[in-house]
Image (cartoon, rainbow, N blue to C red; front, side):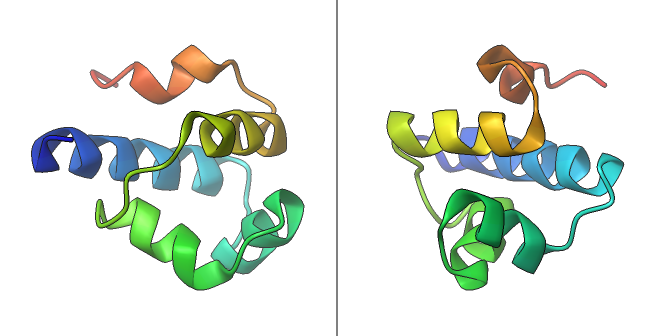
Length: 72
């Protein structure tokens, strides 16, 4: 996947996490992943699977499409 898209996704993920006043550790716990992976996602260094996107959207209580609204 294009690095620019991953960076934009990562920033959106971080923004959504912070809006919910969650730490990376708390989000990781909700999703069942290691906090380091959350950090890598937010830094745009990992390409999440569709399954992971669904888990993250459930943990953040958002629609899957909310990850792709980049013009906030």
